[in-house]
Figure 1 (spheres, one colour):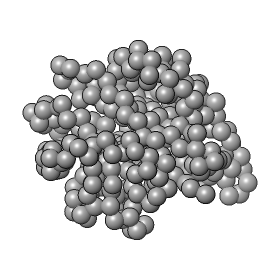
Figure 2: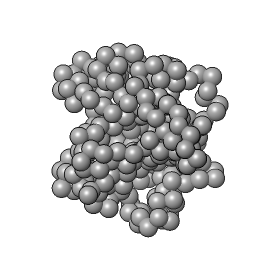
Figure 3: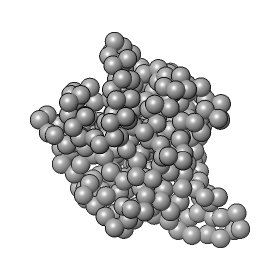
Length: 281
């Protein structure tokens, strides 16, 4: 039975998501790290020697802290898909961590000669049967990098995961005017909330179209005061999790600040398991 594993890594105030595809390939949606933990090094230690696809939702450094590690370990990526319409000047202007920015821009330059390969993730023969779809907001002229943030929809075994990057409410509303986008996100099972669950990027109109079982937030404790977790809990139907001691609890929203790394395993028959801190559904 084929299986896909998605992990939302606990990288504090950043975003790093890995997809271990049924054919053994690795895709990452953003790649951040902390001073103490690198998801890329964890994948390497688990035997993965290549990042086959790196999807950069947008070039803020809290989504890019592990880019240099990918380069140091010579893990690729084979293909990097990112917002190519953003100027280097704006990227440098809208980021404080200059070292991370320059690592990203150097990697960006290495892939400008491979545009013919950027779409190969659309062929499910390459991804082990996993469908990956990007939704691109209308962002001309804005100086806010979050307005460029891509949304990634992952489908496998008739299960859907919607990863929002740092997409702003204005961008989400614009995408919801697209009938094709609305049709494709119908039936989303799991939502990775935008911008670390910040209230500023909560868009209630999204829930006119989706009713996730569970919402996942990649955040840290410093963001708790500006979090919209309670609102995401309201819209999520919830799942029962059980500890190794047999204690059960209903959860509607998982956060990396409280729950650590969060993994979803999906089989090609639609069966799934969600795991965090020794708990599973």
